[in-house]
Length: 95
Image (cartoon, rainbow, N blue to C red):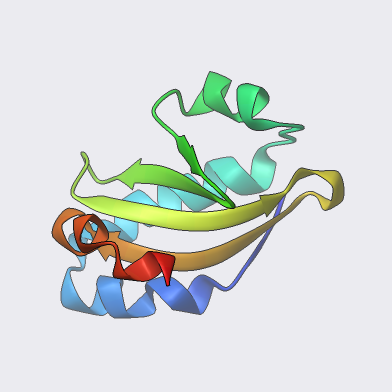
């Protein structure tokens, strides 16, 4: 998979360096993946949720939410947001 928009997580990493290792591990797995659909993705990340049109991953022991749009057909992941759990719960990212 090709990951686009990594700059979306720079602010979160700047605020909490510990999330950098967790997002780096997610990135390594995602780039090596060949997911064809959500069911395929959930074999790797069972807790990933589909919130139309996004896929939401729990990062760093559920402290963060990584929100991406995946185009399986083109093998591309567009990173939209990396938010703390509290920021995610506010729902402003949906707008």
